[in-house]
Image (cartoon, rainbow, N blue to C red; front, side, top):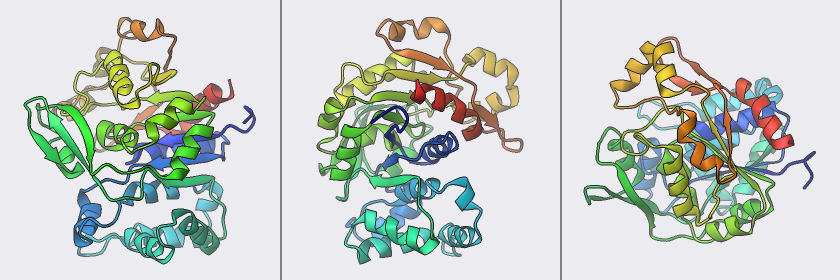
Length: 340
């Protein structure tokens, strides 16, 4: 695959992966394989999985990634906005209509998510900028052990303990499940793999756990790019340094060099706190902090040949003082990395 037509894989879910997908599309890329976890057990997804007695995968991240693959031009079409508004509708019993429709189509096409995507493309009369792929089609749950020795099951427990000082020590799947052949093929043939921001263990690391993934990561010749979160989560990334990121990725990818590029904020934590005191205060109340590091904390990775790339490609929300990655600011940055 030439640099003119790079084959890009994104790994992640939540709101982070769709943001990166949108940035890639704005940068002009259209050969995107958006791989997401399928083990969520919280919120509306958890209700559906519970109702189905854990016999279905979690499709929430899959659907978010799929919708993110709609080009900006197509997203403004009346038929597209009409359907996406329906897919995002939540009724009085807190049920998401999009999930209901997607699960119905999965059942109609016997879990063939590619046929589901083609059905939606045909319905909307558009072509998406890639494909949305679940990491596995077999129902499973994440399990994790904390530093105190507690063992928990379900991503909803990970979310529930997000403010806890009892940080995650180890994570695994129960039962073990096979990765989808489409995810394995996409990783092996990729020119670039992007580890997206999002729940560190719930949306990113969990993608390495299905059977076959680490072997495909060994086979691929792709350049691997890690985009870190902007703020920490107390039980997952509190005081995490770039070196610690590297060590955790090494452990779960089983790669000596798990990523070649590390994209982090230009500002250090101290600089950010001085410039955005209201945002800092907002996150401090949740035991979170800005994830920005001085140069001396990245030197050990630079010595391994990892390119440290700094950019303040974020914005702050005016009302709630939240931080968000900005697809418009990221697009030129990602285009330069991938084209180079």
